[in-house]
Each structure stands twice: as C-alpha cells, then as structure tokens.
Amino acid sequence: MTSINMLPPRIGRVALTVADVDRSIRFYEEVIGLTLLERIGEMARMGAGNKAFLLLQGLDGARPARRVAG
Image 1 (cartoon, rainbow, N blue to C red):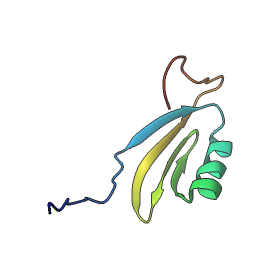
Image 2: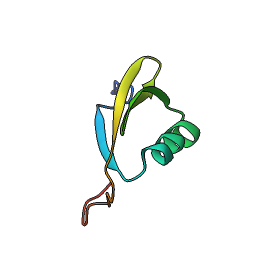
Image 3: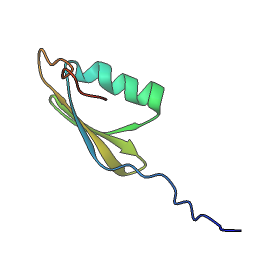
C-alpha cells in the first residue's frame, strides 16, 4: 500500500482593496477569527498570532473586479 504525505494547508500573503475598512475588519475578526495587528488610516494588517498575512487597503468607491474569481 502506498502512503501519502499530506502537508498542512498554508496561506500566503493577501492584499485586498476594500470600500469600507472598518466593515472589513469586523468581518475578518468576527467571522473568520483573524486579529487586527496594525491600523494606519485606511490600511489594516490582520493575521493570526503575530503573523500578518492579510492587508486591507481602503479606497472610496472600490468595487469587486468583474469576471474575477474570489
């Protein structure tokens, strides 16, 4: 029988442009369980523990890209 070595899932860094940084922070804290690590104006770094892997950048009028998954 062949065994398969399953590595634990990993995530790289992600940067998102959002219309409402405060609303996005609440979502990632309350729904996903991330921690706000740093907030400077319309920019927020979030992650787990001390590891930052999500950057939120606020931009007035930001809208989802068309025909893009995610």
